[in-house]
Each structure stands twice: as structure tokens, then as C-alpha cells.
Length: 248
Length: 277
Image 1 (cartoon, each protein chain N blue to C red):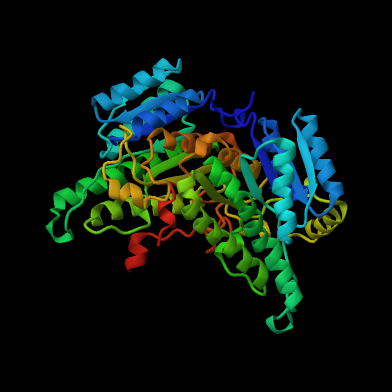
Image 2 (cartoon, rainbow over the protein chains, first blue to last red; image 1 turned 180 degrees about the horizontal axis):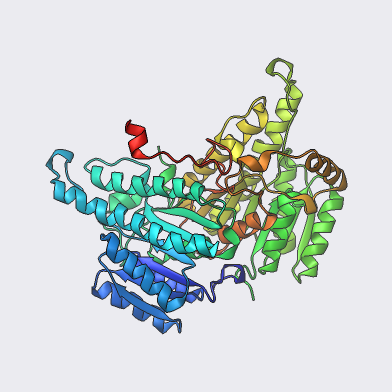
């Protein structure tokens, strides 16, 4: 159940990214809070599943197959959403491509792919949708990234750099648009599991909450940040990680 | 029906300011509220507001710098309300002595400030922790301040105490996580709690406004926060929606800590060609 203050009735949310985890829970949470949904992602079953879920809640839902690494395609996707819904109130960027390799072994093409999916896609969507939000004098941008935007990780150079780039984009944009009514925030995720069991028990023990997160536990914070009561919250990085980031 | 129906929430410093605004915001969403602070009068007024919303309110006059009274607050709440779901450690002195050089600060001034702002969080959390641990659930929300993340000239007690609250949050979160207790902190920026303050404060604020406060120039969003901005954040943190969130500082400050580099609206434009010339 969504608290009245967090309801999103009459709002349009655009959710982007080909991530393994986030698309479905974020779309579910936003739709259940009352938002109409557009999903821009590669043409896969993840895109179709997400749109089906939104429809099943009785909300309007639009699938926009998009190569999210292409600036031109992103712009087209955003234009299509505006054409269909008239506005974009909420943008959630949730692309998440993993690459963990020794730094010297990473090929240029692999590095670029991680940057394209994790960072450039968010950058393109922020610009295309942000332009509309600034005109509307109101908007909510939420970048779902990893705690590794702040922390380092051995063999994680490409991933850490791409996530850190989105975090700095979040902060700088928040200030640039601070007087326009558009807020920009980021959510820092930790270790999550879809099937309830921890992929690595040693990691589960290391997490203060002693368990992996469930994807739907991201959705509730997305809804809070997307709601009308967060006017004063911008440029922030909020963790949903069972306490992981409090470790040394 | 609200998302906090049936929950019992203790708010220290619940008589005025953010404490009162959180109390009303959470009661509106269905929670029964226990307010604790030294002065009874403002507590009663908050309680009237809570009852007007149809919720139960309990007033427990408490000096949160006295561990015995903090223990009594928890016991009284359990006796009267039957349970506790959330403890919000909100009590604090906004400022100690201002513009006093280090060598002139008295022991008493230092200790009073640290006791109210930091030790009280420890006392109340300790008092409720065994109960939360035994029932394997509970939430603690500490109210820190942006000052806990930065320095400020001549503000020894306040900035130190609030930084302490931030890290006490992390330590409690990590230590109590295995009992399914979640500990987070709210980090407000400059929030105007004018309407929830006693008259003498209102007069002082009115004077400050008349002389033209410059504070908003340094809040990127261009205006101060509303009490509800913090109230709804507390609602999120009190509700089941935040069950996997712990040890996190939730900064609600209009972008203050993110910027802090230039005044609001300062946006240079330099082309790459110029920069490389």
C-alpha cells in the first residue's frame, strides 16, 4: 500500500535500462503507486515483462524498444513518450552491466560497452527527458546505481568508474537544475537476489542485515523520491544495501 | 487507513520544531505517538494535535540527558501503549553559544550541549534496544544535521555532536542489524519550523527575516525546507517500505551538502575552446 503522500496518480514515469534486477520491481512499485509507465530498454523479454506488469495494475503502459546506448535513439524514445503521454514527470535510469576483469586485460570495446550502458545511457536520458522537465518546471530524476559509485572494488575498474560517473552527473545536474523544480537523486544498491537465496553466503554474512536484498526493496525508495513530498531533496545518494556502506 | 496504522512511535523533542511536525505527519498516517521533552506545555499542544487526527497521544515529560528518565520513558510507553515500533531521537539544542572563542567555552556549556545532542541518542537507544532485540524488530531514527558533515566557525559542540550522531547511527545499525533492528538518520538542512516554535523564537526569526537573512543564497534549491519535507522522510523511514535500509544518512537539505562551492545560481559557462586557449 502506498501512503497518500507518496501517491503518483496522474504522473508519467519513464523507466530505462536493460538491467537484470531493477526493471521489474521499479515498474511494479511506480505503477502500484498510480503512475503511468513507459519502459525504454532493449527489445527483450525483460521489456515485455515489465510492461505487462504495469498493465496488470490497470495503468497505462508503453513499451519503447530502444538501444539505450545511442543518443539519437534515446532522443526518439523520449519524444515518443512525450507524444504519447504529453509529459514526463519521473525518469528512472536503471541500467546495470557488470564487468569484473583485471584492469590491464580489459579491451577497449569492453570498457566502452560498460560506459555506454551504465553511464552514457543515463546521460542521454537525463538530457533528453530533463529538457522536457525543465520546460515543465518540475521533474524527478532517479538514477539507480551501485554503492560502487563511491567504493572501490578489485577488478571492478570499469564498473566502478561507470557508476561513479553517474553519481557525479547526479550531483552536478542537481545543482544546475536546483532552481528549476527538477530534482536529481541517486540510489546506491548493494547485493540483491531474485530467488531469495544468497549467491554467496560469505557476502551475506558480511552484510550487516545478514541477508541479500530483494529487488522490490528498491521500489519503495524510488516511489518516495518520485513523489511530490521530496522537493527539498536533491543531489543525494541514498543507500539500500542492508547497511553495507557503513562498513570501513 | 494509513501505512502506519497500529504503530507506536516515540519522538523525543516532540513539543516543538521538527519533533512536532513529524508527530503530526506520522499521526496523520495512522501512528500513535509518544512525545517526550522537558517542558510539558508544548508537549500537550502536540498531543492535542495528534488527538485531533484521531490517534492516541501520550505525553511523557523527560529530560533526555538523564539516563534514568530515558529508561522511564521506555517503561512508561510500554506500560501505557503496550509496545514500541519506532524511536525517533530528535531532541537537540540547535545552537550552543555562538561566536565564542574556544578558550572561553565553559565545561558546563560543552557538556550540556553534547549531552542533549549526542548522549541523549545513546541513552534512549540503549533503553529501547533490549526490548527491540528481544522481539527481533524495531526502528531507530536519529535526527542529525548537515552540520554533522561539515565544519562551521566557532560551532564546536553542535557540529561535533551531530557528526557523532551520524556515526553512532552507523555503529548501532551494524551492531543491531542481526536483531532485525534498523537504524538510520535524517539529516535536515535549513528547515523553517517557524509555525511549530514558541513565541519567543518566532519573534527572533521575524527579526532575522526583517534584517534580510542570506542563508537561502547558499541553498542550491533557492529556499529553505518545510517541516513536512522532514515529516514525510520520517514516514518513509518508519514504514515497512524501508525494511532493507539501514545505516544510511538521508540528507534533505535542498542540495546544500552536494554544492557548498558557490552561491545559488552561480553557473559559469566556459567553452572547451576557451579553456584550451
